Length: 316
Image 1 (cartoon, rainbow, N blue to C red):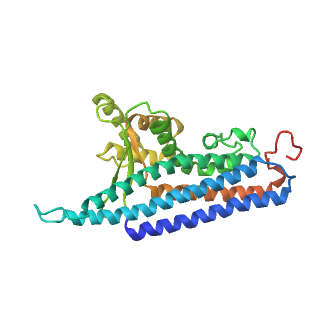
Image 2 (cartoon, helix red, strand yellow):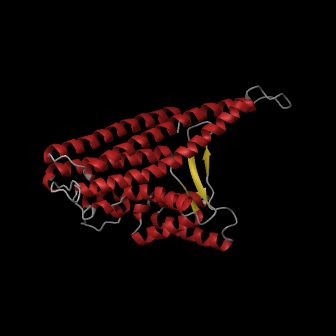
Image 3 (cartoon, rainbow, N blue to C red):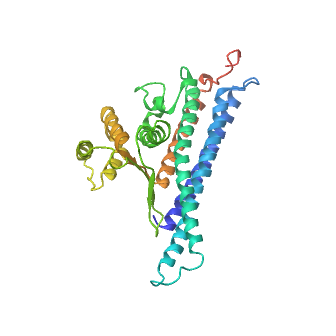
C-alpha cells in the first residue's frame, strides 16, 4: 500500500466511525422518545452507551495504528539512508537514536494491533447485547456475538444473518488470537510481524514454533490445507501460511463442518492475520450495516423492544 492510499484509507475509516457514532446516538434517542420510560436504569441504554465507548476506543487505537505506520515509514527511510554510508566509515551520529525510534514505533504498532483484536471482540459482544434487547430476544443478557453467529436460520437474529460472511471473518481472527495467543496458550506459538521498509505494508503473524510439530504432522496439515484450497479454486502458495490465510479469509465459502476443520488447523499451525487497514474497514462496514438495520427495525417495532428494566420495575 502506498502512502496516498494509506492516508485515504485512514480518512475514510474515520468518516465511517463518525457515521457509526451518529447511528448509536440516533437509536438511543429514538427509542427513548418513542417509549418515554420512567426514570430508571435500563440495560438497552446501558449497552448503547457502552457500544459508543468501545467504538470510540477502537477509533483511537486504529487511528494511532495508521499514524504510527506513517511514522515508522519515515524512520525506516532514515535508517536506510544511514546504511548507504561507505564501508569502514564511522557510524553517523544519531544512528542509534534512529534505530531506537524504529523499534519503539514498531513495538507500539504490535501492541495496538493486538489491542484492536481484543477490543473488537468486546465491541462486537456489546453490539450483540444491544441487538438482543432491540429484537426482544429471550435472555438478552446472555447474548454474545458468537450466539448471533451460530443462530439458526429464521431465529431471533435473522435480521443480521445476511452479514454471516463478515461475521465469520471478524470472529475467526479475533477469537483465534484471543483464545490461543492470550487466554489458552497451550502451545509455543510465536508472535511476529513482517513489513516493507519502503511502503505501508504490515502484517501480524502467529506461527507455531519450529520443531513443535513433527514432519508427519506438518505434512498432514499441508495436505488438508491444499485439499480445501483446491476445492474452492484458491491458488496454492509455496508458503503454507499464506494458503491457510486464504481459507480463513474466505471461511464463509465452506460449510460448518469444513469451517471447524479449518479453524482446528489454524489452532494447530498458528496463522497470519489481515492487515490492520483491511480489518478496520471490515469492522466499520459491519457495524454500520448492522446499526442501520437495527434502527430501521426499531422504528417499526418500538412497542416490542425490551428496554431491560430492573426486575422490580413495572416499566419494561
